[in-house]
Length: 591
Ligand code: PEP
Ligand code: MG
Image (cartoon, rainbow, N blue to C red):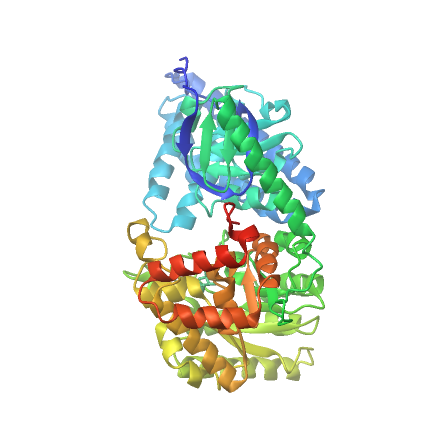
């Protein structure tokens, strides 16, 4: 079936998951458009089953080969677990036995496999958890691979990619993404995918601009079609006019220029022009982000989200594995501190096989530290691993979602008992390890002065704090307009927490997304935050603004903002002020 003609400047909008602009020609990855279907005779059943089993073996050997290739590339090594997931799917009886049962009902292998995949996909789609639901793309990737083998289609398309290609695929599997040659692929776009899909995670690790979730882009685009993608805004433009092309070329150059220019900030101190230092640290999900974080000038980790270590697997990681990962991170970041947050499971972060029952209101349910305090053995295992890693460098422990003093006291009691155990076993750890909490519940704000007496530091998790303070689900697009970081209630809450921390003479930082917004830097300065922790790519931009302001300016501006009544008024005021004070940074080209 031919494609309909695509008009000049056809805009598609998806989810920008990896920033940057890609300009090139579409390379539509080979996808089987239809599955052959026929009835087989009784005496063909065994032959067909053998054909299916051969496809399974061949797929496994292809995956092992990819695994071997990527294990030679250190920055990708961590993603080998995705290939392991695919290998496990190939062995899964749900897939193999169901397909064979259908073949025994005289259905050919391709069609039997297709029907099995459809049934499994339905099972996946009913899963509420977004993260797990997105894992159905792993199933699709395996299915595609098997279908290609059954149809005798060579998996060579990736090698055929030419320079300046914008790879378009219904769903690019993580295994395929890992093989993309950065010198040839200037971006990719997919019909499927969300922000937490493996493919999105990989795109960011690789620094390839990407737009996902376009729904039906591959039905519209065709091979060699000129196109532009903007991985920051999620915009894809097909058949761009000369004018659009020039405009985006300009934006691409500006983006690249800024990226380059910003690397010059790496070694400059993160301090205001009146010499007030603020530690700019990174939030970390994956070990593979460490080199890029260091390259962007992160002076340590302000939030290590350990829950990612527990995902995509049936069993939680044991002490040895956790110790291995934590100590690697600590050693690579030395001499800077690493704040390891204990497991923040539950809510929207589903962890398999951890007795997390279905909850009607998971955001307010058994998540984070509440879960750890119920599963004490699991909690102790993690604390042992963190403590042991503290012998290798500067480690700090942070407990998530604390809502009262009793909770943190229980955490500290368990920590003490784990320390005693280690001591008795003669295992080294830092006895002075700093203990902190995330401030992300309204109750923690209200009793901040009580909590400050219990810990060495606070880190404000604005992502959750905003959702709980304003009663706005952080993931619900229908109420997104109410999710206002500059809401007067939030500014007041932040001020109350910082004042309580200063009063008790403990450190206070911020690790929610609010810390990464250059426009908010004067507010953060005015609050007197000691540390800002963010996605590493944002560090140079925040540092640039910081170096152009004084702490006094921040305090003055914050005081003015605290007089205003609505989030909109506050946002307008701050934008106007920043444009006036720093026209180079906040003029037309808002960074
Ligand atoms: C937060 O809530 O602001 C935070 C940093 O934690 P997470 O986004 O992991 O919930
Ligand atoms: Mg949180």
